[in-house]
Length: 149
Ligand SMILES: [Zn+2]
Ligand SMILES: [Zn+2]
Picture 1: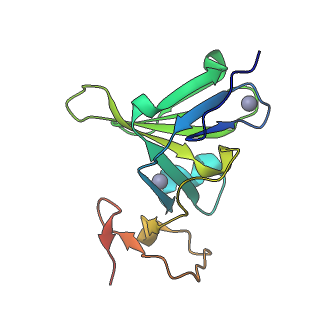
Picture 2: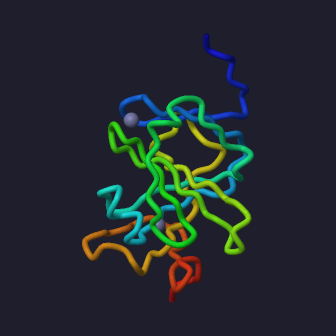
């Protein structure tokens, strides 16, 4: 049985369909990330993320298919163990009191969001062969979010 989906929710899933999830709008941001920890597992020039607080994120199906990789002390990346689709990145509080923001790959969502990509982050970490010709802010530095000159 399929439950009706409210208008302020967006569903998503992996390539094989094992993992399905739902986020509730509004999202927190939408950004292209050029850091190497995004580029490598996705096999991509950069990765476009949106984010919601954990309470606005729900796994609908396939929790057991999710594989977790701790890419840093504070980041847990999750992907489908069957098809390899990179889906989520949980960011933990530094004090260990649970995740505060849940990054979700824009490409895994099934419907338009409440916003378009707004910026490039970790832009100074981008692959040498990446050429960007849009007018979005290009941020970088130690935290990936500082204006670049
Ligand atoms: Zn899958
Ligand atoms: Zn990144």
